[in-house]
Length: 286
Image (tube, rainbow, N blue to C red):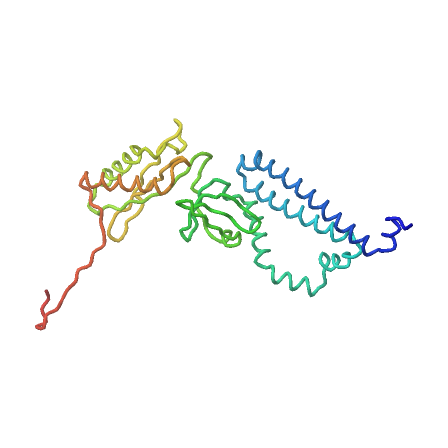
Protein backbone atom coordinates (compact mmCIF):
# COMPACT_ATOMS: atom_id res chain seq x y z
CA UNK A 1 0.00 0.00 0.00
CA UNK A 2 1.42 3.37 -1.05
CA UNK A 3 2.15 5.72 1.85
CA UNK A 4 1.55 9.46 1.77
CA UNK A 5 5.30 10.13 1.69
CA UNK A 6 5.78 7.80 -1.27
CA UNK A 7 2.79 9.34 -3.01
CA UNK A 8 4.22 12.82 -2.61
CA UNK A 9 7.65 11.64 -3.77
CA UNK A 10 6.05 10.29 -6.93
CA UNK A 11 4.07 13.50 -7.42
CA UNK A 12 6.72 16.21 -7.07
CA UNK A 13 4.46 18.94 -8.46
CA UNK A 14 1.83 18.27 -5.82
CA UNK A 15 4.47 18.09 -3.10
CA UNK A 16 5.99 21.40 -4.17
CA UNK A 17 2.53 22.96 -4.36
CA UNK A 18 1.75 21.88 -0.80
CA UNK A 19 5.14 23.18 0.32
CA UNK A 20 4.45 26.52 -1.36
CA UNK A 21 1.00 26.78 0.23
CA UNK A 22 2.36 25.92 3.66
CA UNK A 23 5.14 28.49 3.36
CA UNK A 24 2.63 31.12 2.25
CA UNK A 25 0.39 30.42 5.26
CA UNK A 26 3.38 30.53 7.60
CA UNK A 27 4.58 33.80 6.02
CA UNK A 28 1.15 35.40 6.45
CA UNK A 29 1.09 34.40 10.12
CA UNK A 30 4.61 35.73 10.74
CA UNK A 31 3.97 39.01 8.92
CA UNK A 32 0.69 39.52 10.76
CA UNK A 33 2.35 38.97 14.15
CA UNK A 34 5.28 41.25 13.29
CA UNK A 35 3.01 44.05 12.07
CA UNK A 36 0.80 43.77 15.16
CA UNK A 37 3.80 43.99 17.46
CA UNK A 38 5.10 46.93 15.44
CA UNK A 39 1.73 48.67 15.71
CA UNK A 40 1.71 48.30 19.49
CA UNK A 41 5.25 49.68 19.67
CA UNK A 42 4.16 52.53 17.43
CA UNK A 43 1.27 53.44 19.70
CA UNK A 44 3.50 53.43 22.78
CA UNK A 45 6.64 54.99 21.34
CA UNK A 46 6.40 56.60 17.92
CA UNK A 47 3.02 58.32 18.24
CA UNK A 48 3.85 59.53 21.74
CA UNK A 49 7.04 61.20 20.53
CA UNK A 50 5.44 62.43 17.27
CA UNK A 51 8.75 62.25 15.39
CA UNK A 52 8.78 62.13 11.58
CA UNK A 53 12.09 60.22 11.54
CA UNK A 54 10.57 57.37 13.55
CA UNK A 55 7.37 57.47 11.49
CA UNK A 56 9.32 57.22 8.22
CA UNK A 57 11.48 54.34 9.54
CA UNK A 58 8.29 52.60 10.65
CA UNK A 59 6.85 52.73 7.12
CA UNK A 60 10.10 51.52 5.57
CA UNK A 61 10.19 48.64 8.07
CA UNK A 62 6.68 47.53 7.09
CA UNK A 63 7.64 47.56 3.41
CA UNK A 64 10.82 45.53 4.04
CA UNK A 65 8.96 42.91 6.12
CA UNK A 66 6.31 42.38 3.43
CA UNK A 67 8.95 42.35 0.65
CA UNK A 68 11.08 39.72 2.40
CA UNK A 69 8.01 37.59 3.16
CA UNK A 70 6.97 37.56 -0.51
CA UNK A 71 10.52 36.67 -1.60
CA UNK A 72 10.68 33.87 0.98
CA UNK A 73 7.43 32.34 -0.29
CA UNK A 74 8.34 32.61 -3.96
CA UNK A 75 11.84 31.16 -3.49
CA UNK A 76 10.67 28.30 -1.22
CA UNK A 77 9.42 26.08 -4.06
CA UNK A 78 11.04 24.92 -7.29
CA UNK A 79 7.74 25.71 -9.02
CA UNK A 80 8.11 29.45 -8.46
CA UNK A 81 11.88 29.84 -8.09
CA UNK A 82 12.41 30.75 -11.72
CA UNK A 83 9.64 33.33 -11.47
CA UNK A 84 11.23 34.64 -8.28
CA UNK A 85 14.58 35.09 -9.96
CA UNK A 86 12.96 37.10 -12.75
CA UNK A 87 10.88 39.07 -10.27
CA UNK A 88 13.62 39.98 -7.83
CA UNK A 89 16.74 39.94 -9.98
CA UNK A 90 15.18 40.97 -13.25
CA UNK A 91 16.64 41.64 -16.68
CA UNK A 92 17.95 44.89 -18.06
CA UNK A 93 14.77 45.57 -20.01
CA UNK A 94 12.46 44.88 -17.05
CA UNK A 95 14.62 47.01 -14.77
CA UNK A 96 14.59 49.88 -17.26
CA UNK A 97 10.81 49.73 -17.74
CA UNK A 98 10.17 49.42 -14.01
CA UNK A 99 12.56 52.27 -13.26
CA UNK A 100 10.86 54.54 -15.79
CA UNK A 101 7.38 53.66 -14.54
CA UNK A 102 8.37 54.07 -10.90
CA UNK A 103 10.03 57.47 -11.24
CA UNK A 104 7.31 59.33 -9.27
CA UNK A 105 7.36 56.66 -6.56
CA UNK A 106 11.16 56.75 -6.32
CA UNK A 107 11.12 60.56 -6.25
CA UNK A 108 8.59 60.54 -3.40
CA UNK A 109 10.62 57.93 -1.51
CA UNK A 110 13.88 59.87 -1.84
CA UNK A 111 12.21 63.17 -0.93
CA UNK A 112 10.61 61.46 2.05
CA UNK A 113 14.09 60.42 3.21
CA UNK A 114 15.31 64.00 2.72
CA UNK A 115 12.41 65.39 4.76
CA UNK A 116 13.07 62.83 7.47
CA UNK A 117 16.77 63.80 7.57
CA UNK A 118 16.23 67.58 7.46
CA UNK A 119 13.24 67.37 9.81
CA UNK A 120 11.61 70.74 9.02
CA UNK A 121 8.55 69.66 11.02
CA UNK A 122 7.26 66.90 13.30
CA UNK A 123 3.97 65.07 13.66
CA UNK A 124 1.48 67.48 15.21
CA UNK A 125 3.17 70.65 13.91
CA UNK A 126 1.14 73.18 11.93
CA UNK A 127 2.84 74.19 8.68
CA UNK A 128 1.96 76.58 5.86
CA UNK A 129 3.25 76.04 2.31
CA UNK A 130 4.15 78.76 -0.19
CA UNK A 131 0.97 78.09 -2.20
CA UNK A 132 -1.15 78.93 0.86
CA UNK A 133 -1.90 75.34 1.87
CA UNK A 134 -1.82 75.01 5.65
CA UNK A 135 -2.66 72.33 8.16
CA UNK A 136 -1.51 70.10 10.99
CA UNK A 137 0.88 67.28 10.07
CA UNK A 138 -0.95 64.06 10.90
CA UNK A 139 1.33 61.50 9.25
CA UNK A 140 4.23 60.93 6.82
CA UNK A 141 4.43 57.80 4.65
CA UNK A 142 6.86 56.60 2.00
CA UNK A 143 4.98 58.62 -0.61
CA UNK A 144 3.15 61.53 1.00
CA UNK A 145 2.49 63.80 3.97
CA UNK A 146 -1.03 64.09 5.38
CA UNK A 147 -2.22 67.51 6.56
CA UNK A 148 -5.44 68.11 8.49
CA UNK A 149 -7.00 71.40 7.45
CA UNK A 150 -9.79 73.48 8.96
CA UNK A 151 -13.05 71.60 9.59
CA UNK A 152 -11.10 68.28 9.66
CA UNK A 153 -10.44 68.37 5.90
CA UNK A 154 -7.47 66.15 5.02
CA UNK A 155 -4.92 67.08 2.36
CA UNK A 156 -2.50 64.49 0.96
CA UNK A 157 0.67 66.06 -0.48
CA UNK A 158 3.34 63.97 -2.30
CA UNK A 159 6.75 64.09 -0.63
CA UNK A 160 8.41 65.27 -3.85
CA UNK A 161 6.04 68.24 -4.16
CA UNK A 162 6.33 69.24 -0.51
CA UNK A 163 10.13 68.91 -0.53
CA UNK A 164 10.35 71.39 -3.42
CA UNK A 165 8.23 74.08 -1.73
CA UNK A 166 8.99 76.73 0.86
CA UNK A 167 7.16 76.17 4.11
CA UNK A 168 6.62 77.96 7.40
CA UNK A 169 6.54 75.90 10.58
CA UNK A 170 4.00 77.57 12.86
CA UNK A 171 4.94 75.44 15.87
CA UNK A 172 8.07 77.10 17.32
CA UNK A 173 8.15 74.87 20.39
CA UNK A 174 6.37 71.78 21.77
CA UNK A 175 2.86 72.65 22.91
CA UNK A 176 2.99 76.06 21.21
CA UNK A 177 2.00 77.53 17.85
CA UNK A 178 2.31 80.96 16.32
CA UNK A 179 0.96 82.97 13.41
CA UNK A 180 2.37 86.14 11.84
CA UNK A 181 -0.30 88.82 11.36
CA UNK A 182 -0.22 92.19 9.57
CA UNK A 183 -2.46 95.23 9.93
CA UNK A 184 -2.69 98.29 7.67
CA UNK A 185 -3.33 101.81 8.97
CA UNK A 186 -3.53 105.20 7.26
CA UNK A 187 -0.43 107.33 6.60
CA UNK A 188 -1.47 110.05 9.04
CA UNK A 189 -1.77 107.56 11.91
CA UNK A 190 0.19 108.01 15.12
CA UNK A 191 2.44 104.95 14.75
CA UNK A 192 3.10 104.51 18.46
CA UNK A 193 -0.62 104.67 19.23
CA UNK A 194 -1.39 102.06 16.56
CA UNK A 195 1.35 99.74 17.82
CA UNK A 196 0.16 100.08 21.42
CA UNK A 197 -3.46 99.47 20.42
CA UNK A 198 -2.60 96.26 18.55
CA UNK A 199 -0.34 95.05 21.37
CA UNK A 200 -3.08 95.61 23.93
CA UNK A 201 -5.63 93.74 21.78
CA UNK A 202 -3.36 90.70 21.41
CA UNK A 203 -2.73 90.55 25.15
CA UNK A 204 -6.45 90.87 25.93
CA UNK A 205 -7.49 88.06 23.57
CA UNK A 206 -8.44 84.88 25.47
CA UNK A 207 -6.89 82.78 22.69
CA UNK A 208 -3.38 84.28 22.72
CA UNK A 209 -0.65 83.32 25.19
CA UNK A 210 2.77 84.74 26.12
CA UNK A 211 4.77 82.23 24.09
CA UNK A 212 7.83 84.24 23.05
CA UNK A 213 10.88 83.24 25.16
CA UNK A 214 12.17 86.16 27.24
CA UNK A 215 14.39 86.89 30.24
CA UNK A 216 11.37 86.76 32.55
CA UNK A 217 9.73 83.72 30.97
CA UNK A 218 7.08 83.81 28.25
CA UNK A 219 6.21 87.13 26.63
CA UNK A 220 3.76 88.36 24.03
CA UNK A 221 5.23 89.12 20.63
CA UNK A 222 6.17 92.80 20.07
CA UNK A 223 4.39 94.90 17.44
CA UNK A 224 6.58 96.26 14.62
CA UNK A 225 6.14 99.01 12.03
CA UNK A 226 7.59 97.03 9.14
CA UNK A 227 6.65 98.65 5.84
CA UNK A 228 5.43 101.65 3.84
CA UNK A 229 2.78 100.23 1.50
CA UNK A 230 1.23 102.09 -1.45
CA UNK A 231 -1.56 103.60 0.61
CA UNK A 232 -0.91 102.50 4.18
CA UNK A 233 1.56 101.83 6.95
CA UNK A 234 1.97 98.14 7.81
CA UNK A 235 2.12 96.94 11.40
CA UNK A 236 2.96 93.33 12.21
CA UNK A 237 3.21 91.00 15.17
CA UNK A 238 3.49 87.30 15.98
CA UNK A 239 0.58 85.85 17.94
CA UNK A 240 1.27 82.77 20.06
CA UNK A 241 -1.42 80.25 20.99
CA UNK A 242 -1.83 76.65 22.14
CA UNK A 243 -2.66 73.71 19.83
CA UNK A 244 -6.09 73.53 21.48
CA UNK A 245 -7.09 76.74 19.63
CA UNK A 246 -7.58 76.41 15.85
CA UNK A 247 -5.45 78.87 13.91
CA UNK A 248 -8.45 80.18 12.00
CA UNK A 249 -10.26 80.94 15.28
CA UNK A 250 -7.23 82.82 16.61
CA UNK A 251 -6.88 84.91 13.44
CA UNK A 252 -10.60 85.66 13.37
CA UNK A 253 -10.63 86.75 17.02
CA UNK A 254 -7.54 88.96 16.71
CA UNK A 255 -8.69 90.55 13.42
CA UNK A 256 -12.11 91.35 14.87
CA UNK A 257 -10.68 92.85 18.04
CA UNK A 258 -8.06 94.90 16.18
CA UNK A 259 -10.68 96.36 13.81
CA UNK A 260 -12.91 97.36 16.70
CA UNK A 261 -9.99 98.84 18.68
CA UNK A 262 -8.66 100.86 15.74
CA UNK A 263 -12.10 102.28 15.00
CA UNK A 264 -12.64 103.10 18.70
CA UNK A 265 -9.34 105.01 18.77
CA UNK A 266 -10.07 106.93 15.57
CA UNK A 267 -7.40 105.12 13.55
CA UNK A 268 -8.34 104.76 9.90
CA UNK A 269 -8.07 101.43 8.14
CA UNK A 270 -7.31 102.37 4.50
CA UNK A 271 -8.79 100.63 1.49
CA UNK A 272 -8.49 101.04 -2.24
CA UNK A 273 -11.16 102.99 -4.10
CA UNK A 274 -11.65 104.15 -7.69
CA UNK A 275 -12.60 107.64 -8.97
CA UNK A 276 -14.66 107.47 -12.15
CA UNK A 277 -14.44 110.53 -14.40
CA UNK A 278 -17.11 110.87 -17.13
CA UNK A 279 -16.64 113.31 -20.04
CA UNK A 280 -19.79 114.98 -21.42
CA UNK A 281 -20.31 115.77 -25.09
CA UNK A 282 -18.79 119.25 -24.72
CA UNK A 283 -15.55 117.81 -23.45
CA UNK A 284 -16.16 118.77 -19.84
CA UNK A 285 -15.73 116.51 -16.91
CA UNK A 286 -18.38 115.43 -14.45
